[in-house]
Image (cartoon, rainbow, N blue to C red; front, side):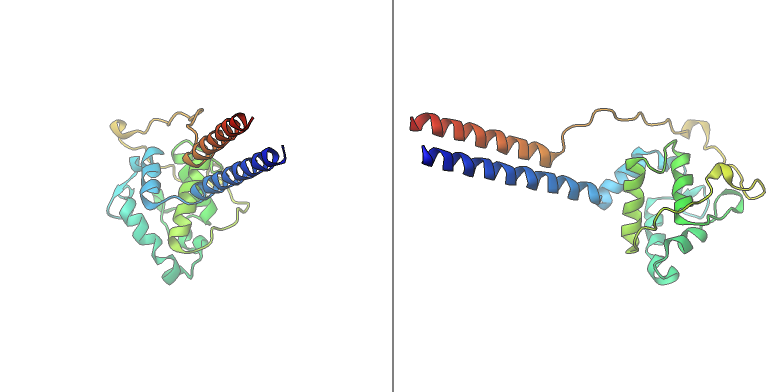
Length: 200
């Protein structure tokens, strides 16, 4: 009886460790996108409706050139994302006041909120790409609150390029780490049950 209890305790302990490792791997995978994942998300969000050019404001820099500009944050802006954002000229010569204001405007351009998890992921990738720490959210004017003389609405892309708002994904698949942890726990429980049944 004592050996069965010890075996069951070991199996449950291993299962708990596996679950914790699975949860940790999920958090790590959500924390940082690879460059390929970030680019895919950038395209999925509809950012490429505007970000197709190779010149400033034509209508906006394409992916590769955005990354080139972000590499200048450390050398030209001392790692300050707000200063970098202030250097970006938006439609009509408007300048952003902060990194957060830039995020708000870009999120609004694709019909999302700055708090949208995918928007956060892409801008966290951009911030990490620069080597700068992401700026803490501050009270900034939303694009609608910007004074009228400086706010020029962004011209709409040509009709054939108008992005359709991506449907909100209600149901997503189980992340790989969690699926692996659940599978291992189930296998451990089944093996433990078989072991205990054969010991009788």
